[in-house]
Length: 90
View 1: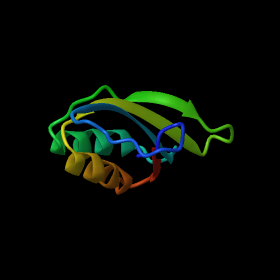
View 2: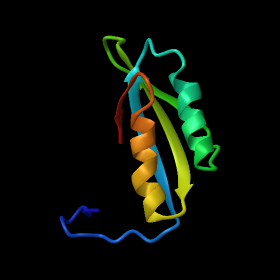
View 3: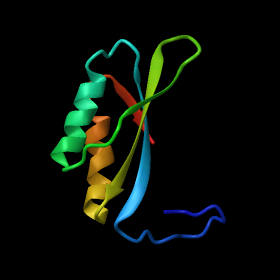
């Protein structure tokens, strides 16, 4: 991971991480699918609604989790990105 100063930063696990997810606003089952992904990894975070896009096409979700290891850190965003209607995971 690159720090604010542009230098490589090594993460120490476990680490608290806040995911910001952008999904199509008409993907009505996206929130439940996101929750199911977190459950697969043994997590049950509060999934909060973030801001919607000005045109109403996208909505955001925010969830903070404790990530136990680098493999989970690498796999969890991939799994979230595969949720139908998901456009981006940050």
